[in-house]
Length: 350
Ligand code: SAM
Ligand code: DTB
Ligand code: SF4
Image (cartoon, rainbow, N blue to C red; front, side, top):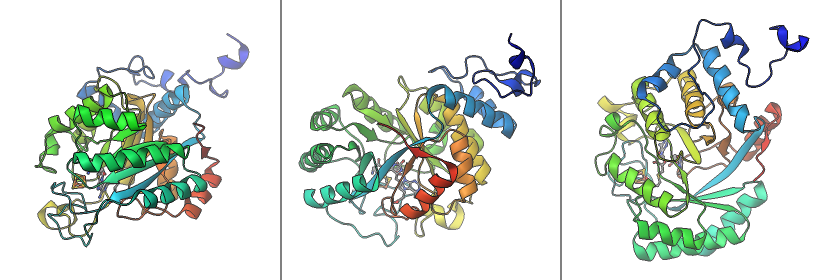
């Protein structure tokens, strides 16, 4: 061994886990390889690691597959807002709750393309169109397909999140040029029923299978801070990492608590989660799905710069950029540019 590697205070060579090598902790085998057989217990054990060990492993895995200074930039647009028949307890767009979000019609093609042009000019590489539907009707899908084709023609990657899809609908979206489809598992299979009753976990897995079979890249993650336990956060990551192919994109959302939703008040009120537990969830997602782009998704508006910086250190490498998510606030572009400059982060090359 060259002299420079013999001493434990030298700059580490990536892939050589110096502190773990000297620690009594056993590193699970094959960290950094893509595996589909993650057990809940293994994922749970990652959550239990001392914070420095977890962060070290997450960074090691991150650097095996990504440039840690690069962040993928997406912009989100609500193309059909509010009035949704589903009862997702976190969602301001459900017609079942009084949140002040007004139901609107599907936007026009021109309005969507104008927004997409602005997003591109501001530096986004992907444009994600969200609709508050349980599932798209075929005539709505026709219009969304035209939007997808138009956005793609602008030179942006395309993403849509429209609710449940049949295989035929997924095929039509693929044919129109859809690159990514977002459909989240949201939480663990066990906690899911406490959050949504109008569709099942299996419904979600079926949509994900239809998207995958159509050849569209999968964007699938969940929400943290809905009153779930660490067991559920581990269950979510284990479910995502056990999919036959890992999602190419994994959004980890921090609950945006919106007044009027069941999680905002009363006996179902979700208490805010410790920011470090959110960081841990990002780190565990990074380790369990080494090649996936992990998005530090909703919830950044009220997040400190320090917490966001820790999320990037934990392996997050994507954000939504622009002052609005679907119906709630996201940091303004100036604020995000300043943070990225301060941290030396740059847009991911596509
Ligand atoms: N209606 C479609 C569906 O549910 O699949 C697409 C839009 S829906 C708003 C997309 C995702 O946004 C949800 O699955 C959920 O994970 C996330 N989301 C919605 N409201 C949220 C909130 N208040 N805080 C954090 N994430 C939220
Ligand atoms: C995802 O995982 N998060 C985004 C996107 N997919 C569609 C949505 C966040 C929504 C936050 C609440 C709102 O703005 O309405
Ligand atoms: Fe509807 Fe989607 Fe909101 Fe659920 S998350 S209420 S399906 S818009």
